[in-house]
Image 1 (tube, each protein chain N blue to C red):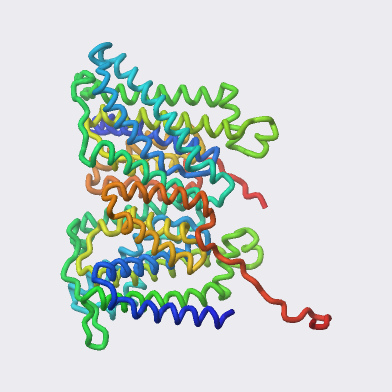
Image 2 (image 1 turned 120 degrees about the horizontal axis):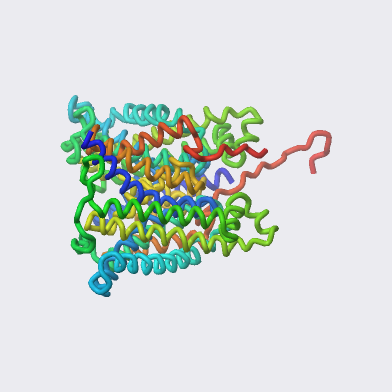
Length: 301
Length: 318
């Protein structure tokens, strides 16, 4: 039982990260109906920029661990939001009226570009986060020792998701995002500047993805320029699992995928870890073709 | 029109056939890669270009064909080219079984599921499933193909094998495009509901095209295996599926000349920028974005079908 809780906690921490990345996929998809394949690489950029900022500014020594990391996180969010906006302007906006497949290839191209940009700047080898940033103590829960880092990661991702959820549900901009996701044409007729909505989505999504990158760095200590592929693919799977375009769906999907993966790796086989996630996805899609929380869309004829 | 195409095809083939003696082995090998990607692209083009189904896991079918050939060849010593129908059947059957429950999924859901299938197959190969795939090291000592007693070894010899197969593929797929089956696929892509309403059994056609595309990729897998004589899971990664997908859209979805050009570009661009060393994939990614912005429909898009009306009933012919 002890091992079960241990794995469950691991899964929740990873799941929180998946969920944060998945939110970026799902928001862009909701408004643009585009799979932003470059999102995983924005996450990688977040991890690398996090390392650079941590090393260069030494905020953690100056302000202490908690405030220092918080400041770094805020800076990463700002930088990634800017990069996201540039990405949209350069690679996606010229393709708004084009066939869907062209936009997908543009997204794949942007992904390859960003991934190699990171490699050229930082090199192809693994980079190591300084170990002593967050205290390495553990807290005891249900007779299981859980490292504080994992609790912090999970709590932070849940907090961010809650803020995002309230933002989308309660504010005017959030309402505009939801309206644009339902029907762009109608939203435009109601006086919503859809291009601005898309820009906002491209500010929020990458910002969350970038923080997720920072979290992975703090949690595992090492980062690599190709990790965006794997994490991106998992997060995208999580978004589909929950029902793409649906914000609570991405959160549920992410946490669920993290837990399933951790338990699968522990009890079935670690070598099959990645395959288990996809098997679960396929099984769920066969039963519910639009994901767990996805709405059934009536076919318009 | 028809004759002109045929003449062009024959002239182009003849021109290519005389090319290898003037090139060194390296560039002939580049041409071989282009040929292999072109056949793979054409097989995926049936699914993505003609039918409009998102398939980002085509490398799985390519892998099944290659591994089927490699396993049967190395354990039972069956001559590799005899296994061509077996590889095709194995990949086609696998595709039919896998696609059966998922083929009704909407666009992007299908996309992630095909990615998932591709990854599952790759992981299964790495984990030495059933103890026959050789794990991460793969399978080696696959024998060379032999045609009428002549063993095909050098890149020059492979050039003729691969491009002959490509030529046959082009001719067959050209007729397929204009057949009842091909037209039905295009209709399905443009409007599934209307196609169903006009009496096209959409589910069966989607399944059929998946199986056909996969079978073709399986045969390319066999040629690839016999060319390399060693195959390992990393030759069949997600990246390969991405390349096949990209070359189709870049060249022009649904158009045979487009796919051929796409294959040449996808292999050629990194070769041309070889001097840039590490930066060449950066250029490659940027080129993908720029090309999509300026040629949204691909470089050579599919031409609309033109039907000449010979006679309108009840009217005099002009």
